[in-house]
Image 1 (cartoon, helix red, strand yellow):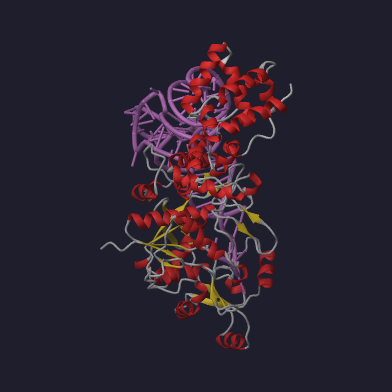
Image 2 (spheres, protein in one colour; image 1 turned 90 degrees about the horizontal axis):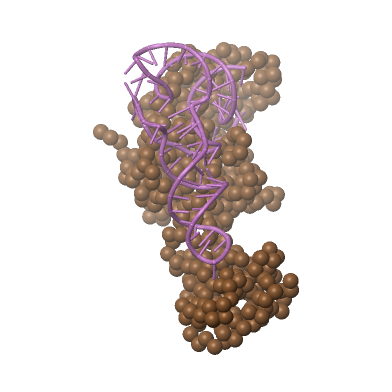
Length: 509
RNA sequence: GGUCCAUUCGUCUAUCGGUUAGGACGCCAGGUUUUCAUCCUGGAAAGAGGGGUUCGACUCCCCUAUGGACUACCA
């Protein structure tokens, strides 16, 4: 019988959720939805030293913004069942201890007293030192100490860790859904720390395996950085007697820096001028801020679409996918094996595409917020008209202002190059005449004004281009913008004439 | 250093032994536009190298090179 699909996204709250983590969450989510399974969010906060306040809230908010919904665990709906609570590892302390003891009792793990300093010394002493079958007899642990000594030390409050006792020279096979079979010899795996007495918490490996088992996770979909420790996890399932219930693994390729080499990192965004985080993040200590996609003006569905295609492809030529289409088309088999360099230009293109396809009301509404910040109050009908005229030249909502500011405020300066090209000796005289023509127009609609103005130009035998381009310069302040009579119609007769007068006064060649 | 993973246009990728190696972003050119942009059309642009296997290899195998991840009482 096929088991129910249950996947988890299990970040640790050590800072803002990185865009690579977002993609991992997304793939988990898509997989869960496609199989009518459950998507869990578990917080892996077993490292108290690295805990960052606000990080958990950030993660939840980011996933929420992107439409990655959680069925169970942290950030799930208030009426979620949460049958496997708690979902913060720091709140599961008591649970882990039991399994650590089980391993200890079975002789599959042991207690070690070596201090960090002692370990450091050993590493300096022995080249390629690894705490394993070859070296553990040299160390201070329950294998080298007698039982009484171990007991006394613990009773005296000496700190210790529990290490897994790895049987050397075993072939460990990891079945990966993306990479196939990966075989590792157990001799290269060290006796990893599973539990530390200092905070009574397990380390990642132990907590991860115990929780995945207890939470009945069917598929572990995570970043490639975990591939080297996957054999350890397989061993842990075996040692705990859970081999039958072991989840399937899928290790995702990494997101790489756009330039040079290496994993995309926190600082790359600001260095290269694009966000690597979903939302803005401000470090509590220090005043470092990192920009996010949301604040940069990205649409969440565009980010999702972009991210989905970074490391996965549908095998068809379709590039624009709604969340539902992604859910339907996604498959682990079509996830690529090699790391993907992060291509910010493509991200912009996705946003542009999405911006073009959004309902005009939605764009106008978003744009209104920007206008309000600039203390500009306009009725929504007019804003909609303006957005409709300039949207195809915008990648982001924030571009809308650059493309349309002249609808709201008259130009204060005139672009030098354009002046040179479009403002000739006879321009002021022609525009002065044009003012008279415009004054006579009652119906200032684009069509009507255009007809009348063009008729006048024809009769006068002026150059159409010369008049129109000068007029554009007067209205916009530079040589850009949509159809000129759409502009005049929106700003109105009075303002149009006012701007022409101003340009005649101010442009001196 | 060791272990593992990877390697097709600048970038994301298609190809699952037989293709003029396809698409997208970006770039260049042309067209549309009274302007700018959008848009449309076209173009340049790739199988890391070397050995095998095969009638035939981008595709399968091996070696080399390169890149990456991991190598903590971090995840």
